[in-house]
Image (cartoon, rainbow, N blue to C red; front, side):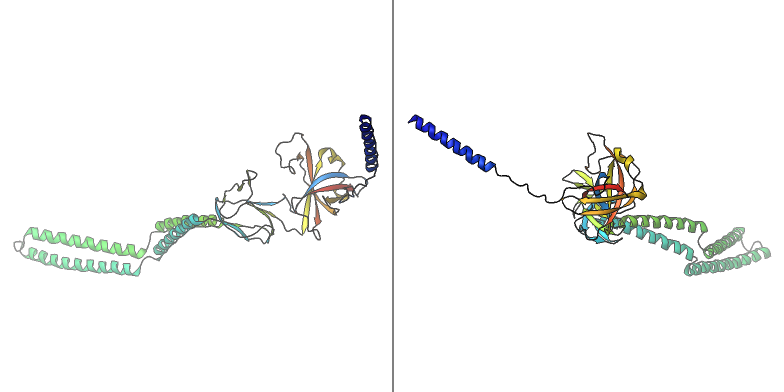
Length: 361
């Protein structure tokens, strides 16, 4: 019985081995690649990593920071929207600044009204009062003068007809009336002359100071509306209504970094590619007039011919693509900028990494 079991197990093992050899002997064909591997279109070429960006004379994107801190009250555009220069993108709470600006405006207008009042002097009503006071002083002087003349004549005829004290009192009254008439006449001349030029100059300076303070406050008020300075496309809005922003930008809770409030690109009819050429390959770069290049979009078979724009003549550490502030290897690269027409290339976006081959004509 035992020998029969061993023989059966041996037969089963032989059959399993034959079946396994038959099954694993089939030749399985490799699946075709989804897209052709990246290859150089030139006989000799330099490979470089590239990043898509909007075509500009400098920089990669338009980073917009608020010049005043505060809470965002309105977001008036959306990401991907094309905007014109002067379009309001966001609004920051301006309630306090608006009241301060209005206060300075009223103070400036009050100073201007006072300046106009000084320049409009003499006021005819004030001049009429001053003239009437002169007439009154002259009448009083004449009455006192007549009274003194009578007492003086009486005293001259008969010194005993009037006392010396009464005559002296009349003389004093005449002197006082003459002085009052002189004061009234000078007051009339002062009113007629108008405001003193130094008072006008002083008031002009006060008005100018308040007017400039109002204009400065109004300019600061306008900065609560974040506007696009150039035509372009909104790439990213890093805050929403109710978020607090400062002149350093907006805080991102995911990366725990401070980002620009709004990131824009230039109009995207023409895009640029910033290539980072390894420093050991810089000496092999062709001359600009003999340079040609082609990009390959990763994950596709799309290839686009590039036009040379410029070289950024500054070799720097390669941290631009990885966003790392520290590198284990001190690899340095030279940025070379190309451009291409975006027509019929709807799947290309700023910030996208591409493979670039640089050859010689």
